[in-house]
Image (cartoon, rainbow, N blue to C red; front, top):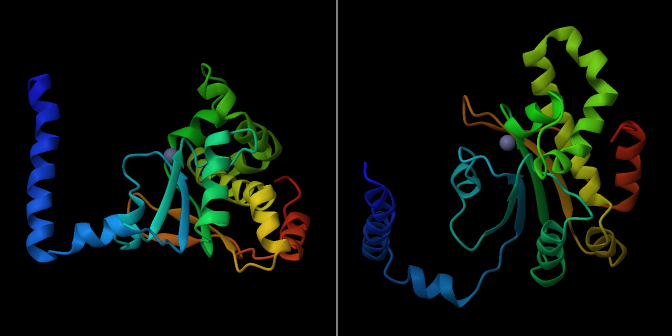
Length: 214
Ligand SMILES: [Zn+2]
């Protein structure tokens, strides 16, 4: 397909989508444009196969989304920190979901050694986590180790999220806010809850004591 056609097809798809949505729900765009009031913030991987609204069945307006490679929550990343703060303080979301996925190339890259910057630096925290668990996890083979590391990464990022000032302030101000750690299966489309959710500083402390390597 010539390059221009490759991009034109997206605009054509868009026109078709607008027509279909308007036919089924004439007020859709007026309603959506007037406000957003999502109850949920999704922090997931950029992977093109993991589409948050599609896999949770949520229409536009109900899910605020932040995605990056390997669903990393890093306090030095102003992008992620801004999204979290906007979600918690302004939109007052009630749930934040950190969602990893099996077959995550970002996690696999961190496990296989170093790569080029900026990705190398981005994956540094996952590489450190791998260093803590490499010996144990490799006993069950590479595939099992990759899957388990992807799960552990969700736990690590969950706790990073729970340590951000935005989330701590919400809990200190007694706002209802719960942090969840999920994983998505590319092979079956199923979302699974990996860890007990965290909704207070004392619950975070308990989770930290149970997972010291995070
Ligand atoms: Zn990924």
